[in-house]
Structures are given as C-alpha cells and as structure tokens.
Length: 103
Image (cartoon, rainbow, N blue to C red; front, top):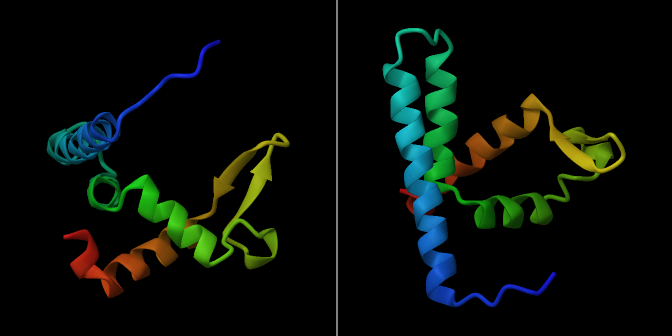
C-alpha cells in the first residue's frame, strides 16, 4: 500500500469537516424525540466539535492519562483503549478551565 501524500490544507479542511459533523450530530441528537439521553450526548459532541482530537491527544499525553494507574481507562482486547467515565469529567473540567481555547 502506498503512502498517501497530504497537504496541510487538506488536513485542515478534513478536521474542519469533522468538527462541523460533530456539531451537526449534536443538534440532530438533541432534536430527536426518540432519544432520551440528549443532554450528555449534546454536550460531548459539541465539545468534540471544538475540542479536536489534536487537543485531546495533547491533554491525555500531558496528564499521562493512558497510564492505567491513573484510573482514566484500560486497554481492551490487547490493543484498544477504553476511556472510563472519569476521563470525560477530566476533559470537561479542562475545557471549562480553558474556555478561551475552545470557543
């Protein structure tokens, strides 16, 4: 398989598209009468729309959050990381303390 050559503009536009899709999904979930668990889903998706994977990676690395001793999550099936509910709280707290960065 050949390596895909990407340009900075294509990465930026892809991240912008993902951000817009997360915000749109948040609104769709909130407006869907068949979904009862709206508020948390809306909040999480809106944070995702502003708090990109880049910022998430920076945060978990700075906090060493994938260290199982920290209690934020666990490796599942030998390879996938599963975040616990406590990590969502840590991310939410970080976003609230750093509103200027994500608004």
